Length: 409
Image 1 (tube, rainbow, N blue to C red):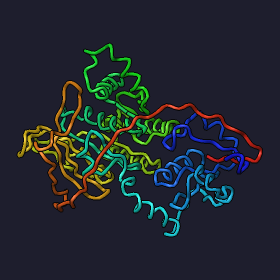
Image 2: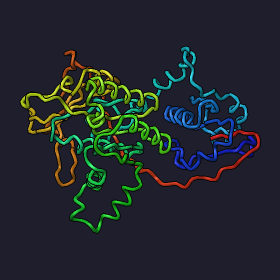
Image 3: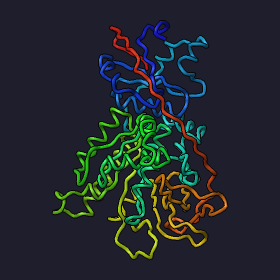
Image 4: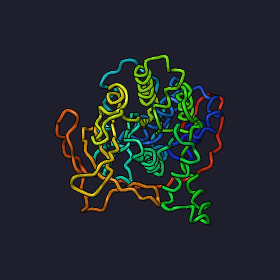
């Protein structure tokens, strides 16, 4: 590629999922950077993410399409690479755009339905039937009764995605990171490592390879400090999923003189803006109101005003009740789904040995669709499927400088 175009060329060692932080200082010397990652929707999203990290004003993007091949394929077909690079579009943001500029992206979403739906869960296939997948840029609000296992469930929920390459940042303000890591490692190994200490190093080595990071905060924290750490993680580690457990710890003692509901609304709005601006999914755990323990939780049961449920793209409720039609004590309720409107419930079973939740065996209790908060029956959901893949290590490549002030990724 360099021999053909005369431009310094850099290949990403880990694919489009990560732009290694070690490369960033070497790229500061270039006045113009062209991103040419591939022809599918995920490549386009990755190019826009990398452009934000590298400064959109100096970045251009080769727009993906069925006719636009990947760099190596274009080279093998004898295409004019220099012409393709010159046709790259500026990555800078505009305040107003027309449908002409959105046309290709709209077509891309229509032509790549499965990719648009997001990453599928491998351990929670029933979740795929309702939410369809885990998507960047969304805000998920998660609640459940005290002692129902919210942290244990959400750790496996996030671990499932992390195993599949979703770079994850954990903000655990209620339990310390050592205890959380112990829970997640047990869920990862699916066995009690206390009784298998000889296997610890083997599982720990595999667990260490995951793109999983933890914020070191504990107890009450200022929202600005937390957001600053999140933005750093997105920049340095290409984080695409942030878990905050839980929102009440954002409302520190310094806020005691202020209206707590107003403070919570501000915090929720801040997380919503962060998710949108950074193309990062934020999962926010919020305790419910103090209500009659005999009643099932509803969307309105979330502590605070209605802003949390209004701002959220998804609302998940861990119900700690017994299903009328089956033996399950706990079940997951999706009470809001902005992506396509499907809501419903599915039972969970807790395995105390592996600290995991799982869908009961087929035939015991089937997925049950429920009405949304407006009593409107949801449309039928197509079945989803999930699969896990391991993230491979790679060494960062060497870079090459050029006096013309340009480089291509």
